[in-house]
Structure formats: structure tokens, C-alpha cells
Image 1 (spheres, rainbow, N blue to C red):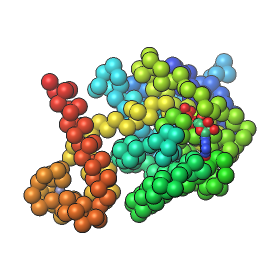
Image 2 (image 1 turned 180 degrees about the horizontal axis):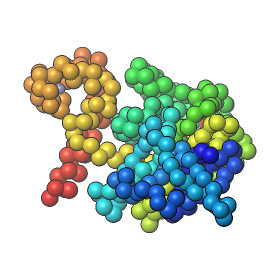
Image 3 (image 1 turned 90 degrees about the vertical axis):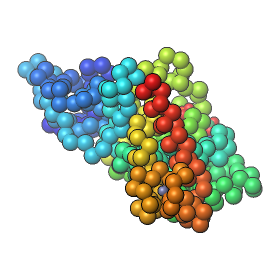
Length: 309
Ligand SMILES: Nc1nc2c(ncn2[C@@H]2O[C@H](COP(=O)(O)OP(=O)(O)OP(=O)(O)O)[C@@H](O)[C@H]2O)c(=O)[nH]1
Ligand SMILES: [Mg+2]
Ligand SMILES: [Zn+2]
């Protein structure tokens, strides 16, 4: 039989099989050395199972992953930890106020998702509380991100604007739902499926001290064939363990113009005849996207500098 991992706790796995949750463990002879990761199996994995004579469920095979999000182990940077797999879409929930989501955060998240080959849509929630001058920021977000192919869905759990669109986006998919605390992730999911009864407006203890060593993701069913992956480790998700030269590959529009730079290792900072800089000056690339790209490069250089010391 086959199933899907919805939660992992130590050596036990919760697996969804034909709509029922069962508990399983790994087959004794499961080859761990095939993986350079700390965990052989992650939330979202499809697996094959068998039953033992004692009627226990045992996982004997993992099916190939479409994609996965991974981070370095906090204890050993040469080891990697898979957070979740087989994600169809990442839904980034943002708000312009209460709380404010920065464009830097949005671009970092998108770059990380691009690096994991996960398509992104942006939900701009709490649209009901916006003041007149904040509307301009809505237009800016729509202008910049829609044109890059990252849909911006305006929503409100109060007026119910955009809820149908979000529901259609989620249906029959596995969606990673992300965003700062307080943007309304749980409220939105409760509106779509009131039976969920997720806790809202509660300062989550996940962020309190002592929890940064473990990153666990959970998956739950929102509707039939529709899954939500919730990962408290979203901060780690955004840590791009990549080299500076790789970052432009994760900014669609920069990647496109970079082909015309004079140097093929151009970082688009201050190099001569840089087609990306020219495109920024000609307003073909949004200045905010370019700035956030440069910030990521600088961050990575800082991290690499301290790690090599
Ligand atoms: N005005 C307004 N308030 C909203 C909207 N959606 C959610 N809220 C409120 O925002 C607060 C936070 O909502 P939550 O759903 O708990 O936020 P969350 O993103 O799940 O937060 P964490 O679980 O901490 O990550 C609650 O008081 C909600 O009632 C909206 O569309 N408009
Ligand atoms: Mg919540
Ligand atoms: Zn360049």
C-alpha cells in the first residue's frame, strides 16, 4: 500500500493511507546511507508500506520527490535536514499593516522558493483595514509581482474578498502556507474550512527561546485532496545556503537580463557593462527588487566570510 507522511516524531511516522492516519516506522534494513541528510523521510513524502506479522505498519520505500525544502542542520553544517516535500505551491500571506511585511522579506521568500523549484503566489490580506495612502502600496505590489508571474490575490477574512480565489488556488494541491505571525494565516484557513478550528491571534510559543534547534513541519488536510503544510521553520527556509553567483538565478527578471552582461560571472553590483544595472536604470527591473537582490548577496558574503574565518 502507499501513503503520505503527515508528521514525523522521532522514529515514528504518521502516515495518511486511504483517508486514515496510521502510525508506522521504518523498515529495519532501510538504507539510510543513500541520503546525506539527518532525516530519511520528511512531511509530504509518498511512501510504500507493508504490514508485519504483528500487524504493525512498516515503511519500506520512499517515492521520488518532486521537490523539497531543505536546511542545514543547526548542529553540523555539513548535514542537511529536509523540512517538507512534494509542494505544489507556496502561498505567501502578507499584510501592509498590522503587521507590516517588508518587500525585502517577500523577495527573500520568493528567491528561496525559486531555489527549491516551488511556484509562489502572494496573498495580500487585511485589505479591509487599508487607508487611502496605503492603496498605492497595493498597486505597487500588483504591478511588480503580477508582471513577474507571481499572482497577487487581495483578500479579507472580514469582507470575504478574494476567499474564493484562494480556495480555488489551494484545491487539489499541497500548499505551503507562510508569512509573518499575525498576518491571518489561521483565520484564512478557518474561513475556507470552519471545521479546522485553528487557533488564531495567539502568540505562538514556537518562537520562544529554545525551539530553534528543531524545525518540524506538519501537514493537514484542508479539503479532500487538498493539503496544507505548516512549517514554523520559515526563517530557516529563507536562509539561502547558496553562493552569491547563484542568487541572480532566483530573480526571474535579473536572470533574464544577466545574459547580456559583459562578464559571465557578473554579480551586477559595480561591474562595467552590466545589463542588469542598465535595465534597472531604464525601469525595466523594479528598483526594490534589485536592492533586495543586492542585500541578499551582501548577506551571503557576510555569512561566508565568518564561516571561513
Ligand atoms: N482586519 C482584519 N483582520 C484580520 C484579517 N484576517 C485575520 N485578521 C486578524 O488578525 C489577527 C491574527 O490572525 P491569525 O490568523 O491568528 O494570524 P496567523 O498568521 O495565523 O499568526 P500565527 O499563527 O502567529 O503565525 C487575528 O486577530 C485575526 O482576527 C482580515 O482580513 N482583516
Ligand atoms: Mg496561526
Ligand atoms: Zn551584470
